[in-house]
Length: 279
Ligand code: ATR
Image (cartoon, rainbow, N blue to C red; front, side):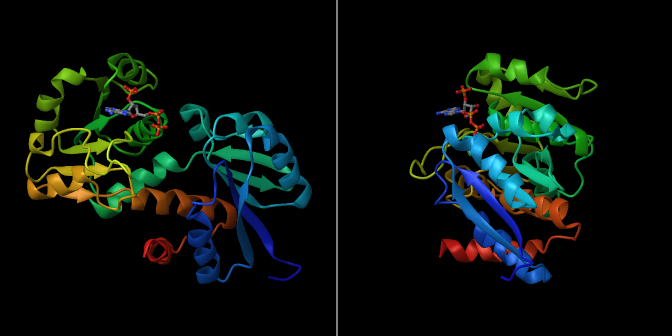
């Protein structure tokens, strides 16, 4: 660090569990960028002060995590199309005092799915389990980045119905009642868990029975703690290909890095840094 070091960080409440500093720190080091990335504990009542602070201090970029992804939009100058559609910001770019909010979660997920599990999504039948904030970002990105057909199933059917009408899809986006999930999973090429079911410490729980999946299909889980969930373990035993949530975390950070620096992100080194932080 010296007097030219460019500042970055992540804000959230809580924040000490965040692996973003380890991951982005490695990205700067690996790319030879003179940047420093910190984790900042910002409570909801201090959010406005924090954003004024990054303007005043000339931070180049910020990641935003729970619980600020929605409220932070009120403090920005511009909201990119991705964040507008999803209704949440996870990345801020500061261009000479003008702050723009982006959402890289959904596109980060799709990049990871294509790189790590299924390069060609055309015509694929995808079932998304869950209809919360995470599902919204992923569904938007799946529709935009691929010619896939997406079915949303949620424990509370009304939320699935609502999300299924949120985006213009040319008929590629539909909801399926939760009680018909068995059949929907059996016909799917890819089943994605966006719910919190299976997250540590409830690691035995599954959002859908893996035996419903077709052998050879892709089972994907957004959860990365644990790195492999009970849903993925079951799906692997069933003969499915499995895709964990770490890649989404890596690529949402990779996109942020690319927006901030204009350089390709060293994704492999970033993943390695996060993995090392687990051991
Ligand atoms: P996030 O932003 O992480 O998506 P969220 O908006 O609170 O969080 O959404 C959580 C999702 O997990 C919802 O789809 C929720 O289903 P409901 O809409 O029915 O609440 C789903 N979920 C949470 N616990 C669940 C459980 N035990 N079984 C099935 N789905 C569950």
